[in-house]
Image (tube, rainbow, N blue to C red; front, side):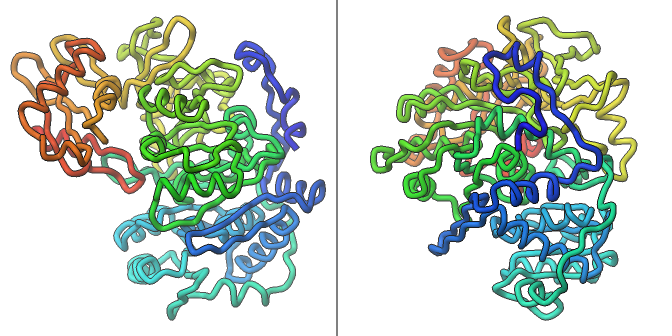
Length: 550
């Protein structure tokens, strides 16, 4: 399958990768027909989805199974009035019906809006009206269906509610009861053009209302690099990405690139994250590849790994937030596996990464994916030199890169603000070393300016995270009459240090940062808290901490 879309499928160096990576984009590409259905013809009995949950249930789906189920789901959605261009929200957690539904909607030519189950009535009303959502398909749980039902009177565009069970309240269609009764699916004569919108994500921004990030039907091909050349997958791989289906990371790691590479996707549907459960699943199912944010790895390395046979695990990747070098070193010492970092946004596919032929530098994101022409710009718009901080930008003056978003839906001004004059501004700041590796600094709004120095939150957070007292921390700037700003650390302590919170521990943490990184970066203000404010996707809301500092 991979050979259908790339001319060269193996590389020996970043130079080779940059020179020879070429991704073929067919006319009217549709992932449902051109990848899933083709696998069903080519290798129908191959396992595509290995699903289990915390109740002990387990189901395997072959590519042939998935073609059958996605066709049936497509016919069912059509019977409910869904057609080309219609907006459909999926609130399906890690239920296997998510995979049935997203592919079915692709086959129809509809627009998929994945959403987290943490949305409240207010969140659903906002999304329904902002995107003119026509149908909502959700997990049949009392809390979820109540929020959806409560939102309906204020969401006039929503014509249909579907529950996949087990709870199907009044006013909801019963997915599993009804979908078996519809006639066989007939493929639409022309389901989509390449530039039609196929996927819409509401980003959980740290300020203001979420933006609507629209991707076209070619977006899955942008994840060829994600699955085949970053996750390093092949047809014998069993890959686990830890992510809820409401977030972009799910299609990064649980769908597009993985199936193009021919790998099987492992899904663990659970209510509460428990590190021991994840390790047990790797042990029981012989998972070969794991991708998760650094927070997950921070919890995994606190477990006794000798209790589990992790010998099947061949490759580990990490994304979602910057990686603290201390986590890299500890995981490597415990497992012999190097964490291969990657960077991207909801607006992009994998943009910068440490690829298999590269030696990772702990804490570095790696080098640019050749799909994107990446640069760093100073605030005045001139290119940053090696070693100098600059905003990460993607050049689009020659052509729109495969995988870059289409637009912020229904917001031309916001689109132009981020993407103009042949440049897409990511809003993230980094620096590049003499070997071409990129190092994350922070969001442009988060960079602290103190006594003429520009201090990135991540570098101070990385230093603090190497102290055993610190479980989590956030670095922000506090206004200061003399220095402009000073560094503040908001710290969540490990259990064994909670009763030691006080001036002595503050001094110990300050001295620790001075030793680990440049002395001028140490936090002059330290606050201990029980938890950090976060978005519903788990990102730290530094803006909320900054607002408290004013």
